[in-house]
Length: 128
Ligand SMILES: Nc1ncnc2c1ncn2[C@@H]1O[C@H](COP(=O)(O)OP(=O)(O)OP(=O)(O)O)[C@@H](O)[C@H]1O
Ligand SMILES: [Mg+2]
Image (cartoon, rainbow, N blue to C red):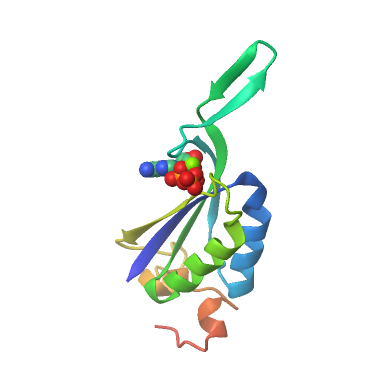
């Protein structure tokens, strides 16, 4: 089973989260600069002519497609590295993934998201 993690995190946490993922052997990922809001609906800022509401705040989105057996370790690494305890720490969404195909080799599924020195090799897991 393949899963996709979509993690929305603080911009200033990107390096910490990237390092934490590298530490556990997560290799393949995408990073997007996005804007959005959660349940606070943005933030109120003090300006020259009174306070105003900024409703869309810059955030970072990380997309990772991985084998289900690595999902919980990866979520844990993100939770630990993206946390401040203040509102706006972000959200992690998890989706099922239908298929992944590495174009060069035509490998599919689990094999298509395995890399030299990755989380599976560190755990001594056999290639599927
Ligand atoms: N339901 C949602 N669907 C998609 N993206 C969302 C959703 N809710 C929030 N987001 C995105 O997640 C980002 C982070 O939201 P945020 O951390 O403020 O979540 P929250 O639910 O308000 O939690 P907290 O109370 O800790 O702030 C938002 O800026 C937005 O980009
Ligand atoms: Mg919020």
